[in-house]
Structure formats: C-alpha cells, structure tokens
Image (cartoon, rainbow, N blue to C red; front, side, top):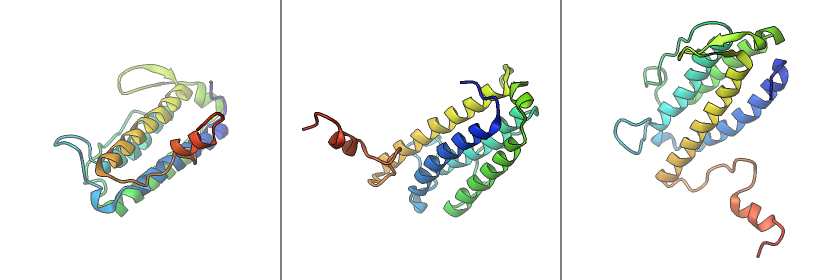
Length: 169
C-alpha cells in the first residue's frame, strides 16, 4: 500500500513500536548483553541497532540525506536503562523528522546505502519490516534465556486464541 501522507504511517509506526517496546521491557536487565553464541548480536546490540538504523539510516535516507549509521556497540549506550533510553530517544527523533515529510517528500526517490533508488514511502515501509524482523529475534533470544512471560503480540497468547476459536476442544 502506498503511503501518500505521513500521519497514517506515523500512527501505524506508533503501534508497531509499542509492541517492540513491550518486548524490550521483557529483557531481564542483567541479560542485556547476553547472546547465544560468540560474535552474534547481544540483546543490547539488537535494541541499539534498531534505534540507530531507524534514526541514522532509514530516516536520514527518507529525508534525502545519506546514511550516518554509527553501528550498534556498547559505546552508544551501556546497561539496560541506558540502552532503553537510547532506543526511546532515537525513536522520538525519528518521529519528529518524519512528521515533517510532505506528500511530495514521500514520493521523492531516495538512495539506500546499497545504492538502490526508490520512493521514500517504500523505504519507510522497509523500515517497519526491519523492526519486526529484529523484534522476532528478541523474542527468540528471550525464549533461549528461559524467559517465560513475554508479551503476546496482539494481546492473546496462541493458547488463548485456540481456546477462543470455534471448534476447539
């Protein structure tokens, strides 16, 4: 679906972001730098990456500027509270910048770091897909850590949906 004005997109992004915030809140603070294998993203890396890539790559490109992605390292924010605040702060900056995009800005072509040229609205749609992808990774990491109480994505667990479904036993 084409994005022709920014307001409906920002409403959608806010809902997606709320679900991401809920899963970030489920990360045990003492496990913020946990990973399942050496050399892989930690939970903190994933949260920092989501924040930085949204703000400094996707939003910069959508605004017609080159990427200035700083990476996802601990030097950006260290410790659970700092990582969570970094994430919230960069997301707020992203939303403020996106709120200024006109319909013409959304239709204008932008260039990605990979050299692709596409309308800014399509790039923003990719930004949401990217967030959802990494949110899924956070859920998997939490499962590997044995975190039993993670937020259901849309309010119900799979078991609750099954119980409420027609023909369930």
